[in-house]
Length: 316
Length: 291
Image (tube, rainbow over the protein chains, first blue to last red):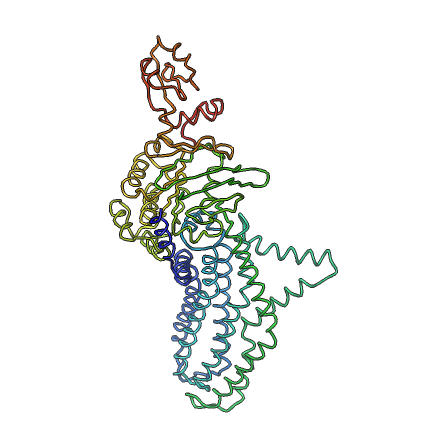
């Protein structure tokens, strides 16, 4: 009796840290959902393939090198901005798809019964899934966007241009920062809602994911005199659009463009641009501090409900 | 200390009562068969024991409340809840990696030694393996975990006879010892009855019989009387009688073997026959391998 109970105490004390459990749970999510990695990679691959086609095309022009126009910071910004926006949107679609599928798939494939047979709590398992959608996926998208920016910068630095490298890096930094906010804060309530739907419904998660909010909006519009929900929805959509599109970085660029051409490796353009970048960051906080806090709170509520739901989840 | 201790365990889904106040006390070192028809409450009972569902009443497994302390419990308890719950996309090697990553009591080399005796390639994905191989892989993972309690819910359903036999042989030879407890449900009662130490019959969410195999052997005797002794045997009051190849077979409860032996052939009754007798013959005219 004594030996048995002492054995039990010693064995129960052997446990792994939460970090280790979440780390391994994240790895297995990435084994399962290859699209988290390959979606954004394929997106960038498509962009690079377009470049290749373009390069082949201009190499046929007889006098391309002598008539090369000077590439301004605005062109660089808008070009990098388009690609960053494109990758950010791919990231969001991949993340939403993952969030709407993961908790449903493990119930439907009955693999839940395997995951639950291991000493990983539901909170740890769902936290790992949240970390995949709000940390791993944005990190991949941002790394690819940064890689693209540096590639473009590396090529253009050898062509005629009127901006400094550090100025361009500052522009990229602002763009990447906005994309990070888009994928990690703005997307959080959308993902969290998708998690909850995925943990509750038995089929057609996309229908619930979109249908319920749209249905609520329609109901409000038709059956009540209020426009509270539609204002929230418009605000949310507007915030996402403003974060992911790169219109705001133009302030920085105009400042930069108003200045005389600087030496290629540094100078005033850099200082001006970083300052403006920071200012637009501060503007962001004052303008969107409240909505962003709301995003975090709503996401936290839905994620918590998803954890509670997973505790009771049964294979279907 | 019992490794499973339940008092008044109850679970209701809407209006349907799945488990209707059962008491259990399963000691260490036992191999217990939980036997009942579909919808009897077997799986609900196991789900409660494994911390998969909330329940009413009191239930302690390895001293834990399964619903509140599932993570802690799962360091002590392994289970195979169904055949084919391993994810199809998982590579065999990654399955070992993951369990090693999250389970402090997983012995990877043990799992690898077991897998080396099978035809399962480490590079394969679960989806590429046959159903029998998936069951072997799951068993390899579970046997390499140094757990005190192993719960098996229909672990061999749909497997062919060779895999089924090998499954239980491995379990007995390479895993089971006096410090472990195994709780198993299966429809293929004949295959497990020789390894069980205890049986629990469950129907309509209640326990009909809970006894050790030794008790059962001491209490129940099956007699196939000779033609001339049939009437005499009937007078001793068999609890049930059925025909095998046209000859009557009678099941006696608490009648001494010495009385019966001279009348014909006596045998230990099969768990399945006992089960059919207890559940009422009318419901089970054709017992067999239910799906």
